[in-house]
Amino acid sequence: MQFNDITFDAKHIWHPYTSIMKPMPTYPIIRASGVELELSDGRKLIDGMSSWWAAIHGYNHPILNQAAIQQLSNMSHVMFGGITHPAAISLCLQLIEIIDNKLECIFLADSGSVAIEIALKMALQYWQAKGEKRHTFVSLQYGYHGDTFGAMLVCDPKNSIHKIYNSYFPVSFFIPAPKCGFYEPWKTEELMPLQKLLKEQSNKIAAIILEPIVQGAGGMRIYHPNYLNEVRELCNQYNILLIVDEIATGFGRTGKLFAYQHSSIVPDILCLGKALTGGYITLSATITSRSIANIISKDKVNYFMHGSTFMGNPLACAIANANITLLRNSSWEKLVKDIEVQLMTELLPLINHPQVSDVRVLGAIGVVEMKKIVNVAKLQHYFVSEGVWIRPFGKIIYIMPPYIINKEQLTKLTQAIKKIVTNKQII
Image 1: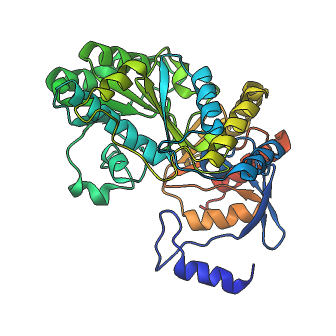
Image 2: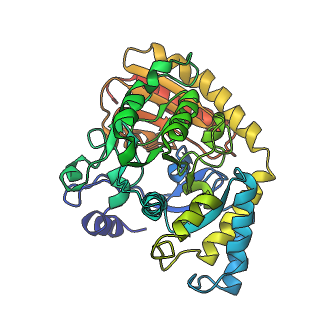
Image 3: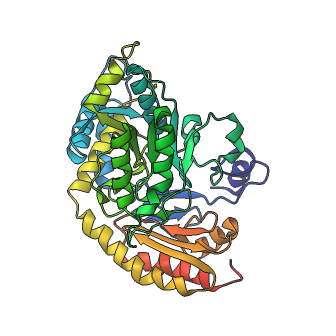
């Protein structure tokens, strides 16, 4: 890549959550393999982000590559309206096998945000079909569910990147996020705000939506599994749907295949994305029960009102199917547990540093929360100079590496974080 290409990028191409007038620096990656990203100048970076939770098997995996090549030789895309194909059928069969068998009706879409939009529409159309006017949702403080308009409706309006749009949204209910940590003794008072809200407003509420166990963009907060059990019981008591957003946490990241499986619940609607295709191509799935799907189908319009050009894309479905098979045939539980143990050993001692507010570890997730907001551009430059790719935000420095990372590579990531924490000049 030539220097002028970088100049063009800075002038013309928007990157996530940045200014086009004053863009943050970008780093030209020309190829990736295993857990390494290669810069245009030949330097290699150990990827600590799995490309935002997605590349769980690393990059350029021969099995996933072959699945893509084989599907390309047949067709890369065909419309899903009035047509089906083996890749979609095989993927959906496998999804039903690995989730609770009460969830069996699957809507395949383009991205995680769209999966959330679909889940919200399912909930609204469900209540419409039942003849009830329930138009509001309950979400958690610090909750994040995507960047499209409906998804923003259920993102925390005060503590999220979307607060500039608040005046455009209809009203949703937001309750305090659980404070009880994953390993702390459970406190039943965590449910009091939700109990009070449901007692007063349950007849208006279509669904409760939450990120199970780990709240991502809202601060990488990790909470107690009992919270999910209690929310499920309240949903049953007040006859409210429960939507679980597993887009970031699904496919082994927290040590369970799905994060909600740390509890004993079954959601009414489940949203999947990110690691669904192993980070190869965008795809999402919104999955619900037969009973809910049947009620939606009894609505006055007789069908669910959603569809998109790339719904059920064969290329994405083929890769996703291979990705899940690869995961199921691997020793992913041990790999994730080994990562967790090493992160606890190498990151938890940082809790005693005066610049650190908290350290959290669960599965293949390591989080160091600083007491002050960090300079992202400055830290990014430092991490690249250390040969690692870590993308902090706010006060959060965190890693979620591919499961195939080895001990030496993971130590390089944690050592880079340790250097940041102990060097006031870098922060």
